[in-house]
Amino acid sequence: MKARHKRDDNGRLIGGALTVFMSRINKTDGCWYWTGRERTKGYGGFTISNKECLAHRVSYEHFVGPIATGLFVCHRCDTPGCVNPAHLFLGTNSDNINDMYAKGRYPLQRLRDMPRDEKKRFVTCA
Ligand SMILES: [Zn+2]
Image (cartoon, rainbow, N blue to C red; front, side):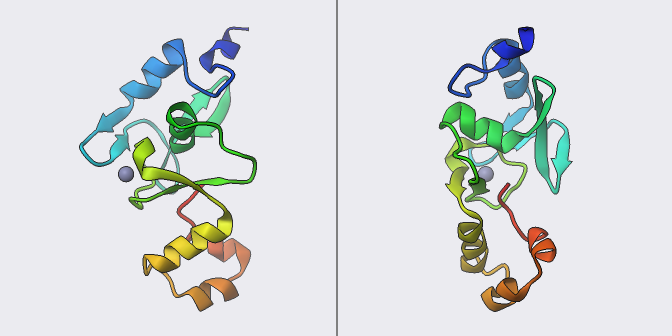
């Protein structure tokens, strides 16, 4: 299957998939802006082997390493469309919420009381 050769065993993009991925990034000294399709809420989308992936997660796996099950890839820069591996870090959902609080985006108590569906709208990691 040709599709198997888009990433190696460590999740690094190879061959044409890497070329296409890199061609969709507008690198600046700060953020690397995704210029490809937007998947949702400002996050870039990238298809690998017919699977719809989030561009910043693909970037993290390629440049940094595997993402353990259940972890989110968060943005230090708060720019969902950024795929600069230096701006990405792994977090749990509660890290995510604490991070939002630390950045003053939302009062912690209101976040804690918020219904799960509502909370999702404020989560910047995916
Ligand atoms: Zn960034």
